[in-house]
Amino acid sequence: MARHRIQASGKHRVNAMNKLHLVFGGRVSDPRKLEFKDLSALDFVGMYPNYKLAEKAWRSAAQRTVDDAEMRYVVVHLHRLLDPDDFTPRPDAED
Image 1: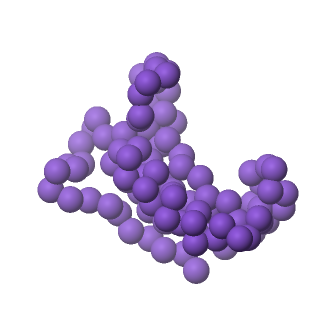
Image 2: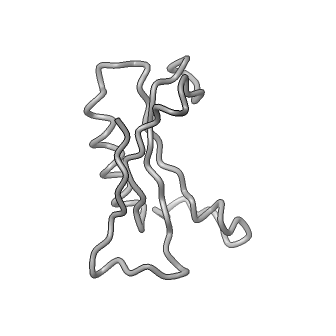
């Protein structure tokens, strides 16, 4: 069952500087790897304007399936993919 929603509120306006994050998950073939068994069955939790909200959504989704070792949820830092030249890793940053 895939869910599709965009997380937005008055204080998170859409603009070119958003640090977009995608949260999704699904059943993996090996719990130690990130190879999904069925791409058509992925659970798209949502798109979030910052890491803090994405992590909250990820924790919620992962907690629902904590007893199923084959289910795995991830946070993808889309802003890094969209503008890789603008990414400078900092150990203290939550982007």
